[in-house]
Image 1 (tube, rainbow, N blue to C red):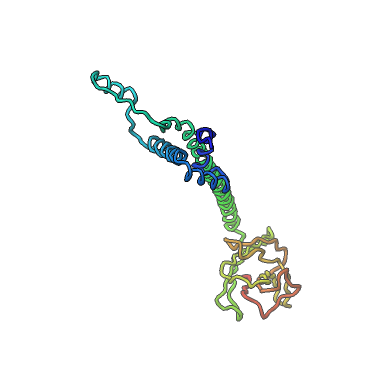
Image 2: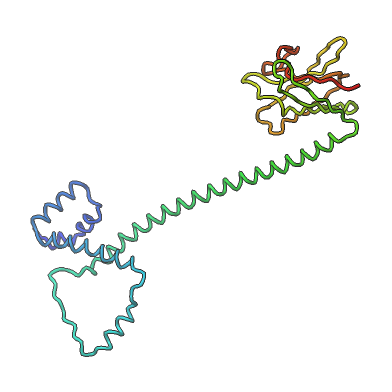
Length: 264
């Protein structure tokens, strides 16, 4: 076997870097055991990579000019040439640097992908924050408008007390008869069960006549629990019952949660 040609083919470099197939790896290992020069060449290649890696890792490598100046200070010093049957490890630095460059580029690519992912997450969080700020500003504006409406001198306040089905419940109705505005503050009502909804009723007492004003829509998701309605009725009382989702034509009196009369 022409071991020199085999060594110069570059297959040993691929072997050390793990780029060969399993079959090719076995073939190189077989030749390395059979031919000492091939085995020694593999060792030299590995030393070259380790040497270059160590050199790149150092942070305080003396400059070439500094080394040269120190040698020039000793003109009588003699450099003893050393003969070698194989190439110096520096002959592999080009190949080793290329391999390390490939590894470095792969690392930088992965780092860049991770950075892009972090940037995307940060942008999403920023958009979410902007949305929340906009919602908060909108909610604040609505709160100011609501306060202005509730402070109207024609706005009547009707407390709604808990009934037999839920004695601890409470609510409050704000009614402007002239503007036909009705606001229900339902903070004191428990969350309705699945498939059920609260329904607001305008009542006349003699004879007792209930008229639906509307449902407390999205009760659970509404943080303020204040609901606005139009009420053109001649109301003498207001009540809130628990009804099947979608509401009922007539109130279920057994599920009357709160009730309050309008002061004359």
